[in-house]
Image (cartoon, rainbow over the protein chains, first blue to last red):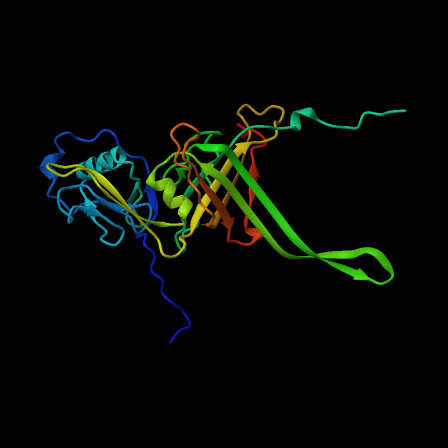
Length: 97
Length: 203
């Protein structure tokens, strides 16, 4: 057994974008059911929760690691900004963008 | 007989300071903003400005020492550090749940956005135990000849706790509500680096 220890940290990758987008697509509602995409959102404070929809399932937490389409993420970020919530946008390791 | 001691009045400074906070995350130390961020500019998320204060920000550094003495000399022959403390205090004056969390030492905030038939609301649960945060500090620095932008002095303490007696007055008109905070450094003193902008970049 090597003398090492694996430690998991909340972040799944480097934070590459922090700005809350304000150019949300007004037609993004068509993507509302999308929960799988390129953009992963998490709260700044690891234990915080941001519920952006009517149901508890529509929540951003650190543990759920939810990913969204760009348009859906923009809509959620705009809602977070309106509610005074900071969300971080996390992209996978190796993403050169 | 008199004389004029040497001095530089330009180095006598006044002015406020800005505190920024972000949660401490194991393995991901808080980073200083880029040098391109001007004094008073936005430190991007996850940094969050601490907001208004009643009487500004106060920094305190203390070092307790042990005198090393010998019988043959009345003054110490040496002093050795036995402890040190680096704190920043303020009386936060923006009455938000974020402020309360900062002052009370941690907690979790659940935010529910308004939706159809759902009222928007926030819930703060104060943490049983202290949460660690990082703080950033920014203020004016001593002016330098040839510098084209306002000089800044910055430091980041990557791990602090917030523990204080938080007394908040609720008065009709006498004063605003305040939340006193004391951020105490939990990293070695030698891990704190203080930077100043000294000169423009060369072309």
